[in-house]
Length: 506
Ligand SMILES: Cc1cc2nc3c(=O)[nH]c(=O)nc-3n(C[C@H](O)[C@H](O)[C@H](O)COP(=O)(O)OP(=O)(O)OC[C@H]3O[C@@H](n4cnc5c(N)ncnc54)[C@H](O)[C@@H]3O)c2cc1C
Image (tube, rainbow, N blue to C red):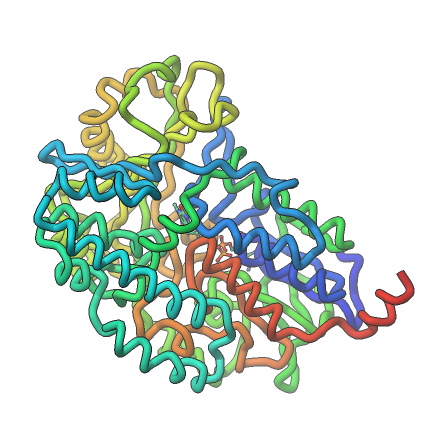
């Protein structure tokens, strides 16, 4: 099955975006890389399935910070924009509330001020102060913290004074409350951590940085979906001489005498002096690395707070492309409660009767996503993860889908009569498809005491030669996060043995 095996061979477990980026970074350092993934497509949560002529992008839809991709490509001597067609979104997204109010986010400050004025004229000054603070948080939270290794606690301690000044102890919702009075605006300024699995009432206000990076770097869509980015990454890896093997489950990361020896897939052991795990950090330490752990014991993993689960209904509708003209590419549909719903999902672990939805309609931008004249959608609802043991998804699956449909019908009236393709993922599927602990959507929740040094390190303390990338590691979930985790890896891993000599010979 494997062709590379030598002192310059490296194995990456998992072809999620973090794993593929790691392989590119290692390839650029001369390692001969083999990526192994159990799925039939690369991309992990960013992969897609095709049903009835509809391409359903299963996970990420919003690409922020395209420069992290550009820099990754640059490290391999290539140009990202030659390989991937990114389109800027305008507006970025629309937020809707049950009272009929709408808020369209975009990069233009004047337009945004007008949006704020429509909701709450008294909050304009507070909104502008929030934006200024968001930029400061970006400087510290992303530039100084997100792109550098954090396994040495001194690195985390260095940013503490800035964190104290920026009131990192305050939640992002608390931070929004301190700036604006309107409840709807508080939601619009604080919901972003939900896209990386964090409870806005509990994760640090440093995440206000997302409002800055959206405005500064835009919100983009990759034509062909994030799958197109993953496929392009595979092409780069192969051009570097690496390989990506799909349909292969890794059962164990071998460790002997405190050093990594390779991986075991079924009965086959493949030797490599360097292994990078892009499998969830929880799965890596609970299942792949056997034996006693120095840091990530089962008890410690159990004590972590995990991100929420997701219920996602992917559906195609026939002949509807010209209908529902006011529904754009990205719509966030609020239910009657914001804080109460967050409490139910994250702290009480119960499946609420009401819900908030994110509605994705890529057919607005990307005609290739559906047969001509048809539409492709997904509706995502945050729900408790499986660790709460509160929902039997084998029973709830269809009942919950019907409830989602009822909410959607207020925005895309009569859509159910047009549904021609359907696919559902519940937390049970996240558990079985991605081997995600508790079936959660985004690994360990990005709370302040589960971030930076406190998160599983990119260089493992459990075995020499073992590294981790992806959502459960530093800096965290989301495409910019997992691509940055591979950038951090690139700073930690040495060049492959003989790399200089081989380069000179070429
Ligand atoms: C529905 C949804 C919507 C999202 N929307 C956005 C968005 O709009 N923008 C954004 O930036 N982020 C978004 N995210 C978050 C983002 O998609 C993820 O944080 C990111 O893709 C995770 O990447 P990763 O590298 O951690 O790996 P994953 O995508 O989790 O991939 C890990 C891979 O490892 C494989 N694997 C695991 N164990 C093994 C094993 N033992 N053997 C072999 N293979 C194994 C799995 O099959 C999987 O392919 C979204 C996530 C979801 C689920």
